[in-house]
Length: 148
Image 1 (cartoon, rainbow, N blue to C red):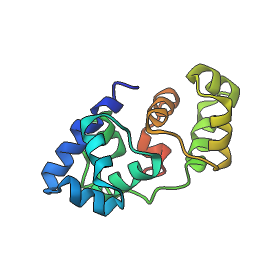
Image 2 (cartoon, rainbow, N blue to C red):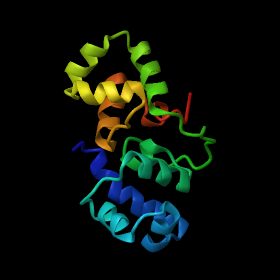
Image 3 (spheres, one colour):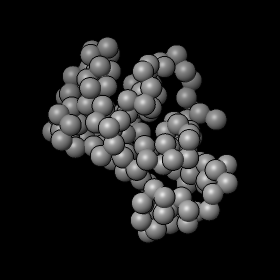
Image 4 (spheres, rainbow, N blue to C red):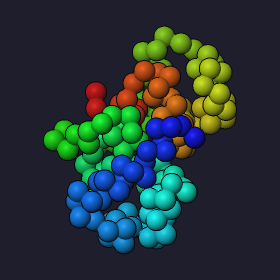
């Protein structure tokens, strides 16, 4: 697991504190069991892609902040709605000037996962988002389509 993803519990606690949100209230807003929020806060579990997106939208914060990639939540930023992952993933690959094969090999991500993401059949896990953003030299918010 990426060192940045490890910061997610600390950052989530900070966001909840700043907004005065309890684990139960957050779970309700995310439409999940509060046990999941507790696991995220303890660092025992990472949210799925869809729950991660719900969290950053709920708090209107940067995905990169939640992951520990930036130092500030950027509440004042107006984020675009999250796009289908495959759209910006393809855009980032094109801008990298590397082949899909080279990216897949250098990141160690399985070809099956890579293929499903490109087709839009699945979304990556949060730790894979960080790995891809780092390798492609873009922000996680960019990969999510929240910023241009």
